[in-house]
Image (tube, rainbow over all chains, first blue to last red; front, top):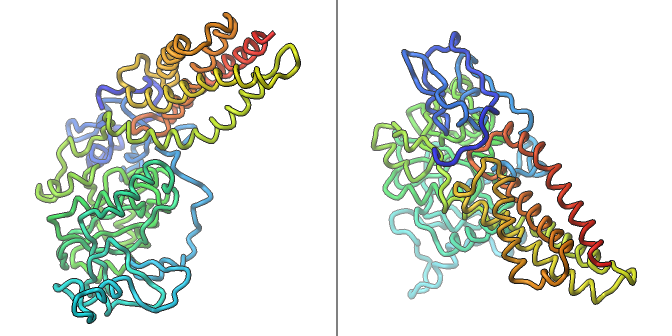
Amino acid sequence: MKNIRYLEDVSTLVFNKDKCVGCSLCTVVCPHQVFEMNDGKAVIVDLDGCMECGACVNNCPVNAIEVNPGVG
Amino acid sequence: MFQEYDEKKVKSTTINPEELKPSGMKSEGVTILPSMNGVSQACISDSGSLKPINEKDDSFEKYAKPGYVLSHFVNRFMDTDAGQIPVVKTEMMLKDMLATVGARAGITRNNYRVIPGLYAAGEPDENSEVLVTANFKLTFDILRKNLKKLNVWILVLDTVGVNVWCAAGKGTFSTRELVRRVESSGLDKVVKHRRIILPQLSATGISARDVKKMSGFSVIYGPVRAQDIQAFLENGKKADPDMRQVTFTFAERLILTPVELNIALKYVLITAVALLVISGIGPGIFSLKSAGERGWISIVFLLTGLLSGAVVTPAFLPLLPFKEFAAKGMISGSLFALCAMFLSSASSLGISAMIALFLFGTSISSFLAMNFTGSTPFTSPSGVEKEMKQFIPIQAGAVALSLVLWIYSAF
């Protein structure tokens, strides 16, 4: 997927690192490897890869992730 | 990808009579004889007596119910503490393949379903894994043909005939449906463990934590693709990074184009009729001859726009410049329009007609290419919204200008 990219700087993905408990489920469910684990917490490594599918938001146990696309 | 969803088709949570039947059966409108396909097939045998079709198990006759016919993909039935469970074939039959072509072409796609509930593949027991899937028959087929050497349970959710990812995005492959289906299928009586394997892409509609809380079953997210399930299970239910990543290869893009064409077809036909009418406008108010001659040329450009926007742009997506699909469609559409210009008699119509045709073909291609953003696994809704705000005015303006020039060129 690295050779097909969509628009940059449009994703509404917001991640609150302070809330993260390091369960790593976001790195499992994301279809575009937007997250990686670093020092026991998730970090966003590819924001422009995000397609706002919401898989990470639904599965984060501490609601540390938000995504708000206007249309769907 | 979300365009497959049809809001009218989404049912409320009232019980559908189909659900009261054991999965693997379907009812026929009229049944004269309370017999099953399986039994009548057995009658053709040499001895003429009723013989079980599958020696391994009891005859289908045991499971026959008046008014029901056996689904062709069911091999036999298994008796469990939760009742009779159909065991599916892991080989595709000609019938499945033909129906796959129909669904891929968009002809039978909207009502191509299997009955939700619990199925088996191979010889599963109380320790076997449970794979959850959607009741779109294409999805179900892709799963079962990848289970050849496995002994697993398959829990089919009611996603109103929509694939896993789209159903998850639109809320039918949901925590609620999963919990309800776990309960109604009696899964807790069939397996001793309390874990279910979900396709990774269903995560958009599922909260693993809530499923655990409400059903007692732990969710394990499996690979994106059914073809990786065997490797995933052999690997101790761990997915390699590749299994977690969505792809969008040339073949994956190309296979979506028949549906794109099918969806566009109705609008193309309406536009073609409108083009014939508009092309008849001229010095004599309206001329049938002109409608035919000029209308025909304009339809050629409509078709090049269709081919460019709905087939060529999707197929060659990464090779076309720009990130906006509408811009990619413009590039491809303008090349196609130029080719059509040289190959048709358009050049004899004068410069304003030529500009009109070029703008028209390019705009159609741009619009249809933009429409393809709804079928990909990587476009964000925010990006699509931005692109539409930017390009719809350009496309509409170009078509309006093209219309004016086209009518002007007739005088």
